[in-house]
Length: 102
Length: 102
DNA sequence: GCAGGGGTTCGACGTTGATCGAACGATTAT
DNA sequence: ATAATCGTTCGATCAACGTCGAACCCCTGC
Image (cartoon, rainbow over all chains, first blue to last red):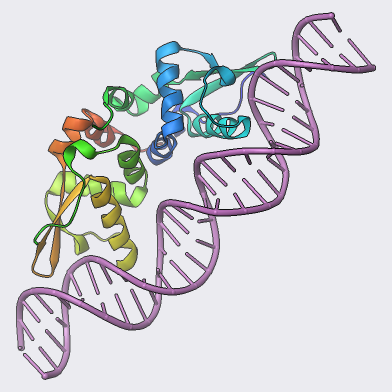
C-alpha cells in the first residue's frame, strides 16, 4: 500500500474540484506543485499548523486534484495534471494564468 | 438606481469567484445565462424556494460573476463574461467545456 | 529497544453556507 | 384602492469548513 486513496479520473466532479481550489492556502499548494513538481507535504511554509496543512492536503487528494504516494515517512504529492486536463480542459491553465487583483 | 451593487472588474478575486461557481445550483444558473443571455431571476425552475434562489443570485452578483439591473419588479441578470474573461482568461470556457462525470 | 521526524487523527471551537417559511417591499394590473 | 406578481430580508436550523493543540502512528537511525 504505497498510494493513498483518491477518486478515479472519470469520477472527478466539477463542483468538488472547484470547492477544493476555492481556497487561498490550497491554491498556493497547487501552484507550487505545478511549478516545482512532486513535493513532500512539509516542504512549503504555509504559516499554518501541521494539522491544518494535513487537512488541506487531504481535501486536495480526496477531490482528485492531487496524487499522494508514501515513501518512508514522507508523503510525496503531485498534481494530477493529466487527469484534470482530460476532464476539465483548460481549467488549470486558466487558474495559473489568473493574475491577482489590483 | 437601476443597477444592483457589484464589484468592479479589477476587484474580482479568484477564490471568491471559484467559491461562487463551486455549487451545482449556481453552475446551472451560470450555464443558463451563458446559453440564453439576460434572464429574470424567476425564469429557471431550480427546485428550491424563492429565498434560497435569491441567496444564490446574490452570491453570484457579489462575487462579480453576474450583473443585475432592475426593470420594474424584475431583476434581469446577465453573465459578466467580458470582465471574467479579462481577469480569468479561459476560466468560463473551461467550465462550460467540462462534461459531467460518468 | 528507543528516540526523533513526518504526518495523521481526534476532539473542540468559531465561522460560514445552504436551506426554509414567513413577513415585507416595490411595481404593475384591475 | 386592491390584488397579484416578483423578489428581498429576517430569523432559524443544520451541516460543512478552517483552525488548533494534543495525542497518536509509522518509519528510520542510532
